[in-house]
Length: 70
Ligand SMILES: [Zn+2]
Figure 1 (tube, rainbow, N blue to C red):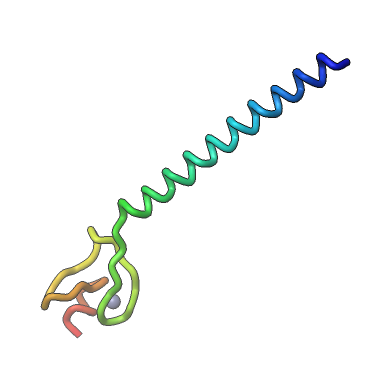
Figure 2: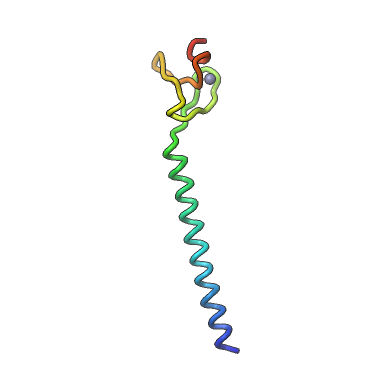
């Protein structure tokens, strides 16, 4: 009986470490993904666009050509 409790305890601790470790990694991966995609605010309408999609002109950043030309 005591042996079973010890085994359950160890399994519980391992499961806890596994899930917290995994969750920590997921949270880290999610954060790095957000950091990798640099979001830029459109100077005209205030929309957020990724660095790749943003249109650069007049020293500012825009979400689309109409915003840049307006
Ligand atoms: Zn815009």
